[in-house]
Amino acid sequence: MLSDLKQKIYVAGHKGMVGSAILRELERKGYTNLVYRTRDELDLTNQAAVQHFFETEKPDQVYLAAAKVGGIYANNTYPADFVYDNLMVQNNVIHQAFMSGVKKLLFLGSSCIYPKLAPQPMAEDALLTGKLEPTNEPYAIAKIAGIKMCESYNRQYGELHDIDYRSVMPTNLYGLGDNYHPENSHVIPALIRRFHEAKVNRASEVIIWGTGTPRREFLYVDDLAKACVFVMGLSKTQYAQVTSPMQSHLNVGFGHDVTIAQLATAIAKVIGYTGTIKFDAAKPDGAPRKWMSSERLQQLGWSAHVDLEEGLQYAYDEFCKTRSEGTMSAR
Ligand SMILES: NC(=O)c1ccc[n+]([C@@H]2O[C@H](COP(=O)([O-])OP(=O)(O)OC[C@H]3O[C@@H](n4cnc5c(N)ncnc54)[C@H](OP(=O)(O)O)[C@@H]3O)[C@@H](O)[C@H]2O)c1
View 1 (cartoon, rainbow, N blue to C red):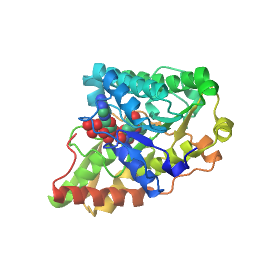
View 2: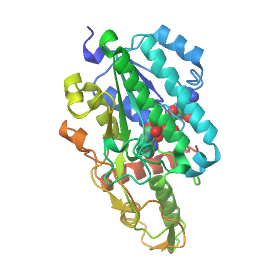
View 3: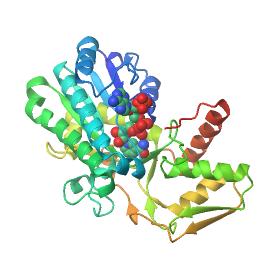
View 4: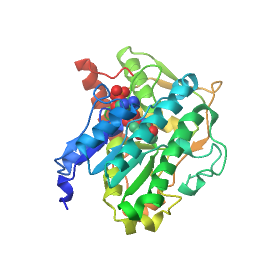
């Protein structure tokens, strides 16, 4: 048995926001045998290529952070790509990992697996209790299939082949490696960009869609990466204390949420924007609240460490750095 730090670990999606944070965390903890491939080197929708990769590399563990990810516009415009790419990537990686003898795997899902009207905070047992949000239903269905695939492999092969495939569902993430595209980014990078541009252009006001009252939860991506490595390090007995064979996923949230107005004020403060923040109540608000219960993970001893203002400062520092270097992601 290899010591844990020498285990060969494959991080799928290591160029993305989550995958790169997981890689940083594994390196920080002293893992030395890490493998990864860019999409050009290994297209994870290609079954034969993925099979060849696993047969050749034979990793011991896998973090599956590769996925086709996007906002409402992309999900609405390319629903076929979202369901096909995600199902192909996860089917190929999970199945070929199993075929090549991978013992431990962590699948990354998302809070959109929960029903649109799930009680708040959303707990793990809300899964499959109601209708999904239609705009990202194909994506959510793929993610639910990924959780169920991990569970089914555990149920059928867990004891016989000593495999242990787990899933985590993060809340909204932000931080290093985020996507600052002007039309296709999540709320934090979009607001960082807008307030930064307003400051540079000395704009007297910034107008934000909606009333500012919806509540959302945000987790700094390095906290998520720590949670992922923590979950992979739990013994089977510990993991089983808060999960069951057919409800095996764990939520990873910050613990509490903020209003969009509070978020905008915090971002303006970090950036040093001193103009007026206005809300356009004629524009849609979305769900009044999206907040995850992370009680199960907390029971096992994990909690988030980076508070919102500190995380926003790190994110803004990186935004300025990548802008000045001209290396900003334009996904
Ligand atoms: N960001 C969030 O707020 C958030 C919240 C909850 C859950 N998550 C989950 O976390 C996971 C990662 O998200 P992220 O934000 O890190 O996304 P991301 O930044 O877009 O990273 C995804 C990575 O997957 C790679 N990839 C996609 N399709 C591939 C393919 N066919 N072959 C090889 N590589 C492929 C991408 O490669 P390229 O670099 O070539 O595009 C990219 O490096 C997803 O499962 C997502 O659901 C994210």
